Amino acid sequence: FATMPSLKQKSLALFLSLLAFSHGFQRTSGPWRTASRAPTMLQKIDQLQLQQPHRSAYAMQTTRRNCQLFGGFMDDIGQFMKRFTTKATASHILMSGGAEAEIKLEDLKAEIGDSPVMFAEAAAKYSECPSASSGGNLGEFGPGAMVKEFDEVVFSPSSETGKVYGPVRTQFGYHLIYISERRD
Image (cartoon, rainbow, N blue to C red):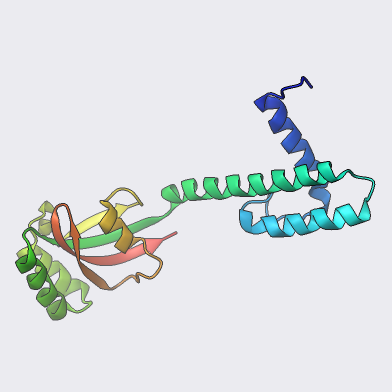
């Protein structure tokens, strides 16, 4: 290797260091998939250091750092892939305006409860969105397809399917949101 290692050389070194220690690590269905596996990997490195005291501290530190970087990288890949696998089906009622629209939607929410049939009827009657003709149904979509405030409600881990949420304020007005289905 030259005095300044290239990215290709660094990548090869990372791969080889991970490969060299792979026999001591537990794997699920492939190389370490998330950083949640990193603590296990780091414990194995510590065990190997005790079993192989002839290995230099620098080599062990480098391997430890590479495992942490690799685990973080795999988490980033997992988040990226989630955008393609996480989907939801939702309906909404949109009303433009200020406080009066919010109050009207709060009253409507109390009247509807969590009934999908009543929600669709109310959407057809009151919503200002073109989706009103289909009972407010927006179809299936993934994270990032809707405005941020809408996405936060639909894809929140605390949001349950079969429930009405809102009023939620966005740049378009106020929404009541009914989450029909969500899958990860």
